[in-house]
Length: 420
Ligand code: NDP
Ligand code: MG
Image (cartoon, rainbow, N blue to C red; front, side):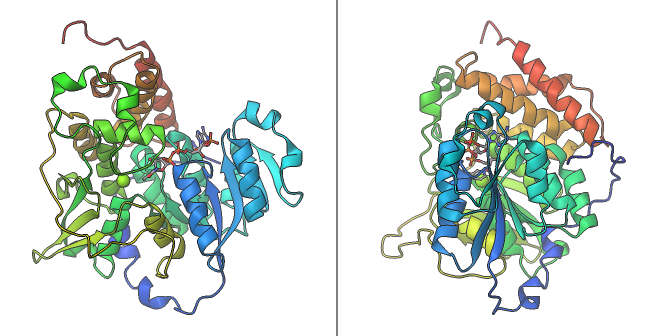
């Protein structure tokens, strides 16, 4: 369970990736044979189903012991028949009450609710928790897994955006390992292996640019949800797809990188790379730059996080060296996509800003998908709510959860400016 009554966090956050992975590559036996026992939170989503595709391809390496979905019970039942988990959890009350129990295998125990998610995430038979619920709703499961000292394969970037310092502090206290699933952060993590924080000059996150790369603000004023949901290189859930179109996804990733790798905001940069093959760069103190490259296919970073530090052939697409010709890079258009700037501001300011930014964005994306506000209103509204919030530099979890609710209410009553 989330414990909102924890004491305030101090200013010192332990270095994460660069230091915690130092040496691990050589300290684990390469002949490890027991499969990793995995609980998949968000199993019916884009990342969840990709995770199960990795598990299907690598049955000797990955054993699915628990599944969590919100509402798609039919798909959950099919997954249970295929993977035979010990437990399956549904978090939507109406979906749980109306599900057909006879559709599930007898050996899978069916449970309802957030407490059951946290119980699963901290279960003794779980080695790795794949955290892939969408939005701030994913924080509770991430938190429970970290509190139990688990290895967490983290797709739910919102956990770090909302509670970065508290989450990383807890991970250090409980000796829990946070392994990034987000492709950019997986790339950075891989490039950092064997290095310490002092070796790193900066990281540069790549961004596809989304479906509206090259458009002007005037053109974006009237784009529809359908247009924004057509991503050129990645197949993802609707919320992150809209975030990719506004570049808010990159803003969230700047904040995620700031906490995950204990970087200063000024050490993080973003470059647009439309092919989505170079998944990010790390520039070291001596000027050397390392990148990780692979076709856009989330099964690779998922597999890397599930099996870390081992590398085995898996189901992800591979680069075709005969077809490679050129990779393009360009600077992001920060004026047309103002959400990106918000990420840098929030990464620099910390405190309550991440929780407010995230909640305001989730609510604003919801209003855009419901056609209540326009595409450019998302960033306008998020900036207005962020600017109006009562900033606390060292919040408790209670404060963050309260501000999450407050920001959603503010977005609900926000009205777009009349003249643009
Ligand atoms: P999807 O929308 O495809 O899936 C979301 C999952 O979360 C579903 O299983 C859904 O259940 C479940 N869910 C939704 N609401 C709740 C809730 N209130 N409580 C518990 N579970 C809930 O999202 P994605 O897979 O695209 O993204 C998941 C996370 O991974 C996000 O944080 C995203 O930022 C991150 N990520 C995604 C990438 C991608 O390529 N998709 C890449 C990098 C990061 P149900 O479907 O049953 O309702
Ligand atoms: Mg990403």
